[in-house]
Image 1 (cartoon, rainbow, N blue to C red):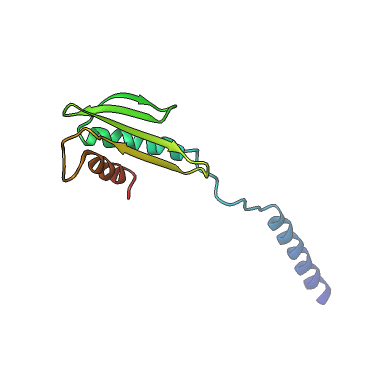
Image 2 (spheres, one colour):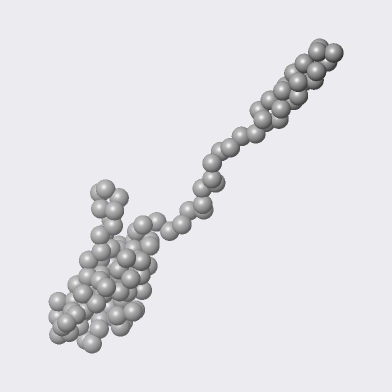
Length: 117
């Protein structure tokens, strides 16, 4: 009688090993590609301009340049790709009489909000 119990155990172990051998875990499936860092920064910069009351006249994504005006003063936003893959955003409104905050500071705060910072 010891033999049938042993062979049943052996058969069950072989069956279990066969089932487990068919299972594989490949980790989580990568999410569909979202916007690049540059695209996200550019969109946030255009949104920040709108939030700050800038009338955007040029939004050239390929050049990374956004231009417009606020209260008659020229406003320029440059979205620049860095060599290390990061993105730098520059805000400029040198002729604006607005102070406390300046137009550039206002744009930067709106940009930071849109980037979730």
